[in-house]
Length: 252
View 1 (cartoon, helix red, strand yellow):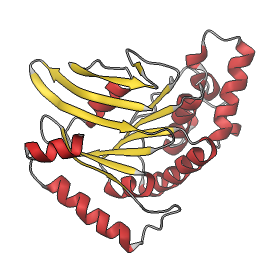
View 2 (cartoon, one colour):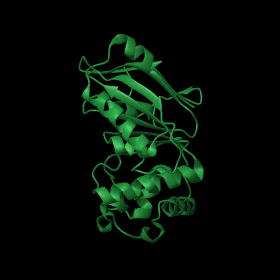
View 3 (cartoon, helix red, strand yellow):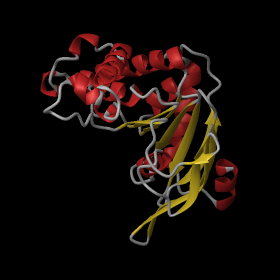
View 4 (tube, rainbow, N blue to C red):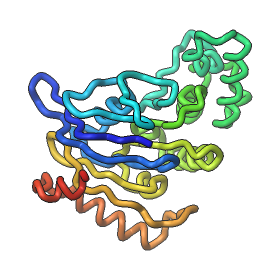
């Protein structure tokens, strides 16, 4: 469904990403895990059409992604809600070309999906951190995108809220099975949510690992098999830049 082919990105002559190749199947949840500065968010912005690669391309269902699209929903690290709009109007903001009644109906449906049906008339300042991020997820879901891109969406939240929203995200996925690509620096989050984990390492960022997590859902956080994966991913993140032959194996 998603094809990432040879993506590289330079900023002022400095390489942020170099030669990224991978594909994502329809309905798959893929975690992009990496250290700070490895280009995780840059990669996600290019997949979402928010940033343009220096070389390479992204294809969605065979078509090159050249900019933002209703088929690509994006959730940022911060909710980025507009304080002068109600929660409902924040969610409906990207539906400006549709009749007002249709906008309202679609926004309210998206709010129900994230458990915020009763918060439609509230202002962003009246929301807790977890509620605000759920509203941001509703805004990304309102166009019924086939791909949901999430850039460390829970990193600013307390531990309990983060775990709760991880479970809620899986419930959303189980209902509609959208393809999900999410960036995280949290190994446990990747292990609980993802079907596959892609590890980016180095500056410029290159793929060190691209492995399927062959663990059934629901997953128990205390499962000893997760401990084995946790150690493996920790070793990756603690390591050095992959050798060229490792990059070729991981990136193809």
